[in-house]
Image 1 (cartoon, rainbow, N blue to C red):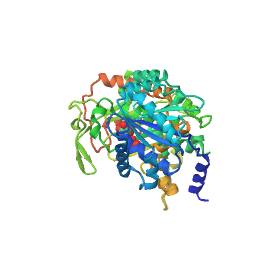
Image 2: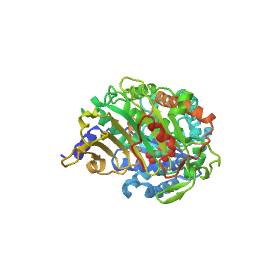
Image 3: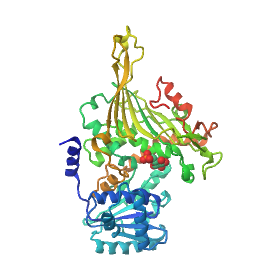
Image 4: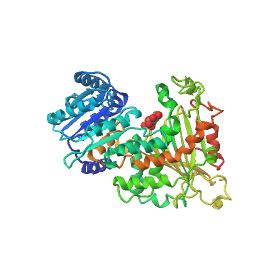
Length: 511
Ligand code: BG6
């Protein structure tokens, strides 16, 4: 049996069939539904991972008949599916699509929903198990959950479950995240809440735990004795394009750091959980986030860098400055780039800096975690022509070209002692082939089987916000004078290079 079939046989044995259920999508006429949720549900159907008794109810304010909803989704699936659409599979899914048009704030939407769900249960045998997916703008979350609660639709019994997936952004800052947690906890138990961070749906992110804790080789050196520092990069070539209205009040710290980058940080730095049980994993994440040394008003200036892109060239195309994007203020202070130096105050990581950076309109799309190991004492090489030893980097490539890469030094063949950096490279697609997916398949499936490991618990979200809150506060009051401070298509502001240079280090991926 080759490696791929071993992996397949393992996954096959652990797949559980979800209970009969209905997925109710609020915001069913929107972008997320057509681009990601429906293609993900189609992939689950294709892999026979949906329950036999299953239905989807779309809710949106767009007036549309059920027949129109079905034909809209049929047209869209052909555009957005990650694999060619098999008509037979799609038709069986299409027959189980229902639609309700209504305003999210109106009581009668929920009485109609209740009615429709009873009908769906009878027609499809879904037994009263409902998964509510909030794919709407964040300002509707409280209303929808409150209304579902008031209509009795969140009530669980021994015979049926009720769960809710909440999209990001979960809050706008620490106070609003706390308030949202508080309000929804009056309607839902924590075990019914699935706060999504789509980074946790990525195979390469899930693999960090297997890589660290499923191999004897790495964990013994995963600490301050052996690791010099860690760099986490999430670089995007895209700008904000049509999302200016949303992004103006958001910025890179809220949009990317507090959630996606902190998830990567927690996965790479947390202690081994007692098990892969949801709470065991989330306990360790919380402990890690709690150990981050809090920013002060002073350290925001020394340990956090913000940037905003100006006009520039990406892939030989001239692109506008952020301030010239639609629905962006011409004097906007919103950051499209952020870099942070974090210190983790625990025994494993004391004195090991973690450098995080993310930005839009950077030269290439790249998400990676690079771990630099400590240098050996160089005395052995004093009498040789080697003046600088090659650093050992272990790089976990999250996307694209998913894999793991190790850089080490080797002797260049020849009579003199010369050293060169060489590489060992593991690429997912070479071992496992590439199975195009949206990244939402695992998350939807896990929610249907009631596994919350890959979802954020309330304390995880609040701790993430607490770390960035001092940065948000300082940046809000100190208006950046130097924006725009990096050209589209460059690797970000000079100050981000200086952040590492001060410590005698440099970002691994240079232009
Ligand atoms: C989203 C952000 O959460 O993640 C976007 O709102 C960002 O601004 C996106 O572009 C990046 O996700 P991915 O999966 O493309 O790395």
